[in-house]
Image 1 (cartoon, rainbow, N blue to C red):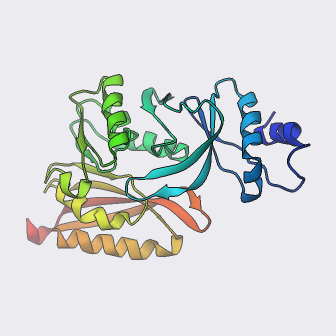
Image 2 (cartoon, rainbow, N blue to C red; image 1 turned 90 degrees about the vertical axis):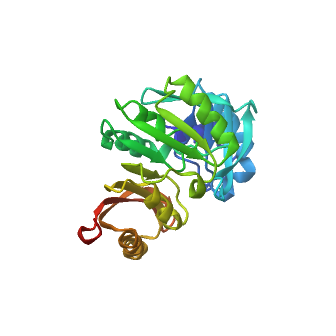
Image 3 (tube, one colour; image 1 turned 30 degrees about the horizontal axis):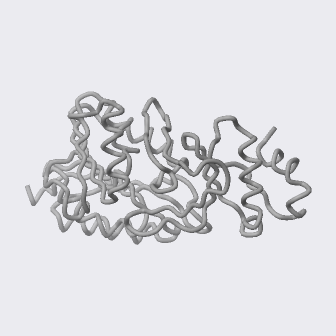
Length: 279
């Protein structure tokens, strides 16, 4: 039985008719992350209790209470059912992630992008992951033979999980964890590929990604959550920054998912080579 139908059957005498029920949830380890319509929030505990009955793997249900906050990317969730111990192990694509999804961001909607990125990386590359969190991009990439990944994370909680996950996945010597702000803690002129897995005003961090890039050029993958109408403006700003740094660039834009109403999660794939007159 589909999740929404299961809720409707179990909550028919509790939730008034016409109140929208969720169609699904995100399961991270044993923790369900759930978004509820405003009208359903008064019944969050009831929804959580019933959700626990839907899948035997579920031991905690957390409801989103607000947007992800600040450059630390702090999620806003409240546990409404089950155990409040939300530290868990999540397995995805053969990678094991130890994390607390109530305290650090781990988006299920980005799974295909994480897989795609690992497929783009080539043996021998040096990769800089500027917003590493618990290793969502860095650890799948570590499976590519011969790569070196510099994984930078500013949030101390996420960084501790990143270090634990490097050990958990036997990626010591491949993934180099760095605690700090990627604007000041990035390496200079070493990267063949830079991943910018942050969504808010990411273009402001592009000059630092360009500093990390090898003088030979390479690839930058800049994530951004914006209205589709703003694409050309962001592209032009990125191209101008590349030229100022001595690179010519070709930019392709991909849509990952809808982020919120009117806002799309996009990736700007920036392919760079040194400008001929700057060699």
